[in-house]
Image 1 (tube, helix red, strand yellow):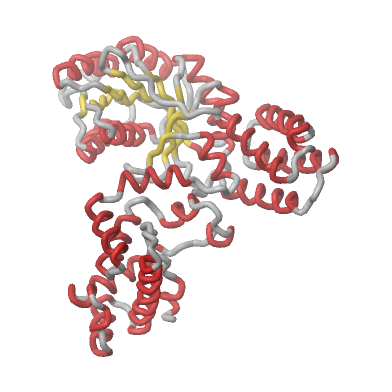
Image 2 (cartoon, rainbow, N blue to C red; image 1 turned 30 degrees about the vertical axis):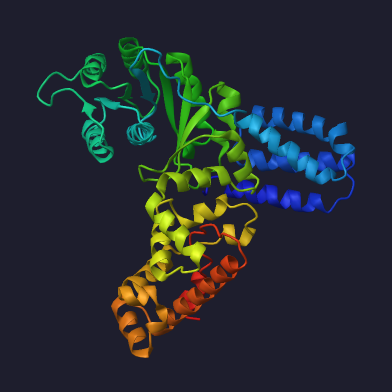
Length: 454
């Protein structure tokens, strides 16, 4: 995730210097507070939010909880972590579900924020939770918006309600009749995609109010592009004043933005961030957890989200087979290939690495080449089933054949086999010691060595 990378680096430098101090004076706390204030302002965090957070931080850092601690530096880091959580919203929010179905979610926002895509992503997530979703194409302003929603609906296998192509095009009527369609189809969640504009105007707000009054939404969500920075806060304030918001969806947080919108919107607007878009794929959509995001910003990892991603993407049968192979010490290249494919479903390897606690800064910031994983997969797929089960069969002529078949070199094939043998030995050592190893995804394979053909 690029959005908080710069802020994370600043915090890492501040805390590294802080850990070298045995005892913190008031002057030390003031110096740290100044550095944190500057880091937050550079990240485009709202000035009022920064001022409030620094005031709370200084009060707590100069208090007894820090000064009487055996490790004042660690206690200050704990205070910063807790204050970040507070600034990001404190507790995790969630959609309000209507006691009398359907639950209606109205999506609003400016044009270009990713509103229609966010509607499709939300539909996919709610469907995975066992809910029956209906998407409603009430954005009749942007060319092709209706067709885009229909395409997304087909991809996530969710029906889309829209005006007939050859009939009258009225957003309010589409939204109103969608409730009857939901009842007819037995759908318990209705997601209404509304029109946006390039800027806030009277016509936009009037239509939104009319759609709102027609469907009486249980949740009104504002979709905001994280790349807009502080303007996102102004947009959220305007929409809240006009139609009343229940939460925010922050999109494109995988982009090279400074992160100020996420750190500002809850405290300024008073509305929680409920979801974040973490990439272009439909599965790149997460519930927003302030505590987990604060941990990511401070470089502490995010194990809970990583576990949830694994549970959502890992095939149970594949995981069970690999676990059985590991427990008997018979981990093969076939098992490795299956596990690697499962891990890739979780998203870019670089993002996964950042969720692991204790990862060296250099490794977190490394530009991991997904093409290296493609080469590993190509090499293994160029082997016969017997060779994948028993790599000792692979002699010199077979290595040449595998290299030609995978479009790689024999040195790359040799490197993979050498490293896999080391992994096998490690697995056998673990099982031989009575320990049941856990699945580790890429199993320690060093892709940089593979590329170098070592």
